[in-house]
Length: 103
Image 1 (cartoon, helix red, strand yellow):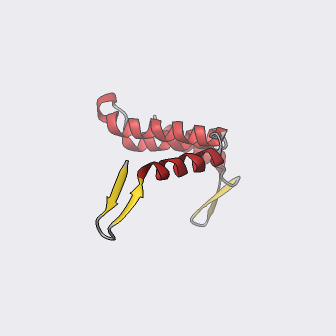
Image 2 (cartoon, one colour):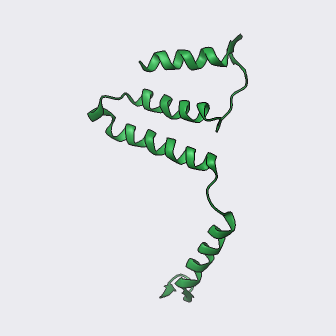
Image 3 (cartoon, one colour):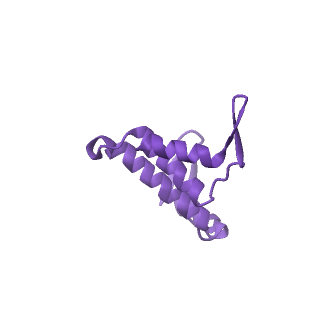
């Protein structure tokens, strides 16, 4: 398929762009475990955002669920102690608080 660039008047081969894209994707290799978990968590979160009103799920709860998936599977790691203002808080306490908030 030929594409004509009207700005410069050039003719470019569309198949070349597709082949280059395939080559670059093959160089990246297959998805890693963390990438699969991230994609699944993001997909679940977006699905709950879209259909949350019909399922009775709050948007904040959906976002916290996505974050919880990433934290539990160690895709995203937080330091053992999180600073909230001047107070030092244990990460487990924060996760427990967020869990209770979702209920």
